[in-house]
Image (cartoon, rainbow, N blue to C red):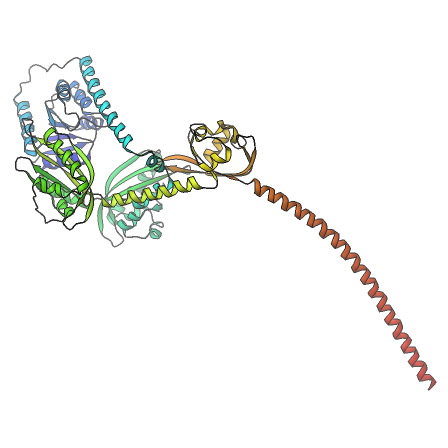
Length: 606
């Protein structure tokens, strides 16, 4: 049987695909409803299993499209969702034409049973009278009602998340140091290269993955990583042409094979996107070593039990709690994180006792709510391993129900995120340093949104120097600030600032709130923060320097005059000396002549 799986989360699609392929079914995955429709138009399918919450086109819309198109309206359709789980959601799905409504997560044997029931019912159904579906207006009303409810829930969730984040962290996130820190500490290899494939920059992980040094990589192209056989067959000209057609924001993800410096070939997932840097398009390739994921996929072909699922990344595992037996089952990865032997199956309370004391109440509360009320959780906490080591973990739990709706298990994933926490801490420290430099700088600093010209921030030195309040800066467009009119008087000046990476003026002036003019040096730089351009303007008061330079010029001018006068006086003295010297020489010559004459007369007399 050929089954179309529609789910925007890769791990969900791979898990379901492995389950069904293990039973001999052929599967195809689409990551949203729109892609699913394209596949339906070109291929024949016996069954559709679709999630609801997806980008571009959700599961409700896909179901409606399938049921209103004569080509596909007889294909059985199962809704499989973890987000829209209420009775009204089920009612809407069934009214739109779904054959069954199943809530994630679901036991594999239960899901397989439901699929068999749906297909059996479909085979026995006589093709006599076409099924009548509710009017479009009724469907649209129900759909809008569910969508509004889900949006309200999402907004409430976003509000809670925004409230939880500190304002200082939001501001610090936009610093250049954070971007660099993320680049250097990313657990994935990151390559920046031009549209010809020449590598311009790489991060630490790229060197670690490939085995090459940074200097060696900067002399290479992205095609140099391909194994020799793959390199022969790759349509390089087509790829280069495609890259040159991309616009900023476009991206592509594919799986390939790379070859390390030592010759070893390994599988990778490469996500490539266009970035505009200094008015030039560059490509950023994020390379993920998926060796472990490939191994997990191969294992899942023969064994699909959720208890054996290992995460795609290191230090990631699965766990399950049987509520009736009060026992935990941990994957090998989870056992390793706790530093206990593989196959360790502690009681629930013993598993909870691994959490650090300050987290006991929290984990007990969220686990109890999940086990009793079906409320899922996704938390970051600390555990204390068997050897006494503190480890930061991310724990996710979901309730598993039987056919009657009774919660019989809690199942989820467990991940060691200690390195991520260390990286976040390092980033926070870096951002704090940047902020302190910003606030303690003895130059004025303005941060401007490069697209709108709106002032985002001004440092204390500039505020104090000009006598305006912080509020008088924020939210204003830079050319609206009267005191900066000599530098940026209109949008044309600002466009010049936008387009040039670096601008420096030394002949400008600012006026403070008292009308006093300050001669300033104005330096601006444009850079990216979270893929958004900002302009940093450094404003240094050079009034004292200009005064000193003016005084120095006056001194130089006076010195030139004095030197000229002294030179003239010295020349006159030299002329006098030359005349005296000539007179002395003439007198000496005359004396010599007299001495010679006297000597001659003496000789003659004798």
